[in-house]
Length: 354
Image (cartoon, rainbow, N blue to C red):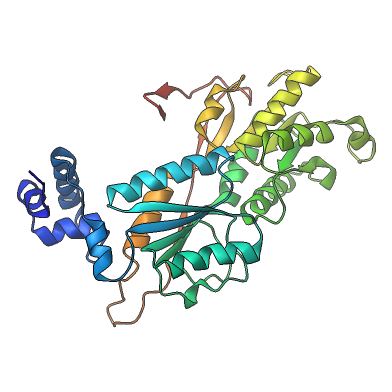
């Protein structure tokens, strides 16, 4: 027998419309207790909302488009998986396009979502063409990045604050000459992390000259090459430094894994000779040797918030005017591994980090 919305409402002790508000993310708010009862009933009964029928009624498909940087980056691979899981929970399918970081081509990808009457669009960090005016679209959208001047709902991590905490952690271990392996300078989030490294070093009266920064693409190979450049004799001789870095803040876990491999090949012991703290908190960083200390971005919270904003995009202010775009800044937490010199405090339980 097919489970209906009415069955869920009866089990949860709410009206059928409340079930719709929960599964569709709006348009009216639902109390935390009622939401919990509805979600428990959905899980117990195995109810699947008929998003396709709802979408057909307003002429849109049951799919949500996602423009995301290349899936070879493990953070974005995990992000896509979490987004799909959350969308399916609401009865939607995921249609994904890969950003080429070419503004013209990415704009074509985004416009194709609108042309295909998608139910909404999610644009991941780093994949937003700066010239694109999303406000002209009728399609609901949310951006997972803090883009200055972009008049659209956005959810993002406070990269400047979180990267600063990572640098603070290395300073707390007594490191003064701290290098930085950066990502592409044109990526807003990568640039913010370099700015945070520089600000924290200067605030502490410690070296922050440009020779302490090595840029690379976000890959293991890029991280390996950047580490070698940062510690090279040539780089050391051409700078004003009197000693090489004793620690490195790395823009991403995938670059940090490349840096770890380079250290192994160069005979550099981690953390005895060089301490490393990175950024992202991807699962496979737990399997590095030594395990990475990393600032974990709150991926589950980012996605839940973004999907909630996306599905509730049609809500208006009380005066009937469109609501001002919502900007949600989230902060991460540090996973303590061994690469910084700490006693590790991260573990693996049932596929989740704790």
